[in-house]
View 1 (cartoon, one colour):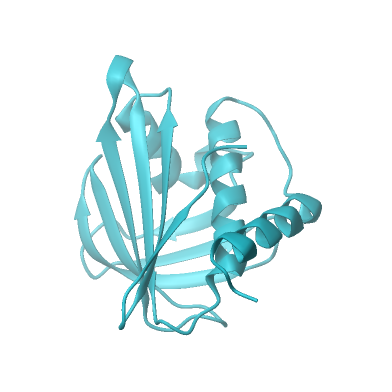
View 2: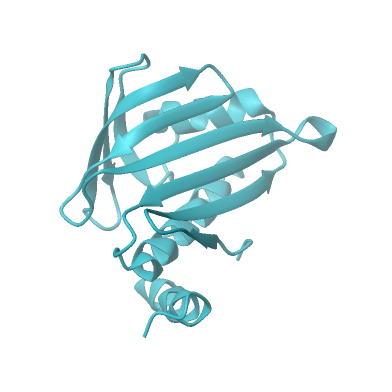
Length: 164
């Protein structure tokens, strides 16, 4: 498993952040994210209108979970900001940063910002596992979603975020 996410809390929001150092060029990581249909083992089927104001729809193949949003900022191979709406979360935002790393690698940073009352341990476990699956997909591996792994991660994030 990869690095754990971190939680930053303030009075008006919570920010869940993850960072992954991926041994692939930024352009390849961007393409894998923006064009998920090209990657059979990636976690979602998606549709991205690649422009500010464009719609995003993500259907997670292994869980049936669906999220929608609107792109608020986009810069090719560098940055994607969008809203995130689903049955559990209203008014949150997601930012994906695709930064060049050493030796032609990509440092992928995910920041998901929520209202202060949302229980983030549930979503943290999901993002963590999805990012692991994304990495495996880039490596050509076909890994499967595991509810057992999600339960373990959920418990660990619950303790780490001191949500009881």
